[in-house]
Image (cartoon, rainbow, N blue to C red; front, side, top):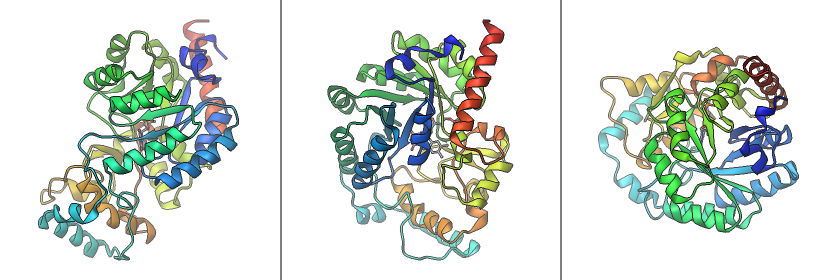
Length: 361
Ligand SMILES: Cc1cc2nc3c(=O)[nH]c(=O)nc-3n(C[C@H](O)[C@H](O)[C@H](O)COP(=O)(O)O)c2cc1C
């Protein structure tokens, strides 16, 4: 291993490699940490009970390796989880658009919720999710969107390392003022919620602002060359999300897997159709429909979650192929076959070492 990989973040967290693996799959998270990286569990769509159980499982599965949990904590969410209130705010034209899609693609209305609508994003739910995290021994708390100063302070007081994901200098200023220990500078290329600034343009700006606070690079990382570049830009590590969708540890419907495997970098698009905020995903009939001239403008979060959540749940349960999809970043082009977490980690380490040897033997 090249000594440049032994970064401040690696030393601080007690990992072996400066590679963070973000995933909604507990199996992926555990495997990343066991392979020497830092697995981060995306739990924003998990109930407080699921968070408690998931963290208990992770503590057992990773032993003394570092790992963390991520919640998305946007500003301006309703105070309580009241779906009836939310439903009453949805305009008729939006309902009709979704109902027309149901007819056009034959999506059964089975009366069940989807991932986005099983509960309404609210301050109350976020507080309960966060309380489970504070009650657990998980060493790292990551704030995906938004870094509420009181939550950052509470997590730090509980002895946790706090990581804030930022996509623009103004987010970084907010996270630094809130007291974040590590920033993740996440560029436009990244899968899921992402901003307007490309990784290459973003990272040095954030590094310059951050001073002694380490900056980890996210968005488009797929090869060891990206790791060497991230370190050259001033980063202290990398954070990957798209890569793990191709691993055996990640449950994935074969229809979606094939779409991901076939996709190149130009086959992803940012759409507000899922959550109300720009979410990078592979292009499908779903994103095409919302790009259409007659499509309504998506609602704000969390109303858009509620407008489309049950519908998207039915799409997956009944496997309506044209609409089946996944979040993914532009790095999707680098992956086309099923692999496993350990293989990805070993390859990243080997390639990063080769790239660094070429630059600084
Ligand atoms: C399927 C998927 C789901 C994601 N969900 C979240 C999330 O819930 N919270 C979050 O902070 N980031 C989420 N992300 C973004 C990742 O944390 C990460 O920043 C991003 O994937 C890095 O860029 P990459 O996709 O180019 O690897 C998600 C990414 C993917 C691919």
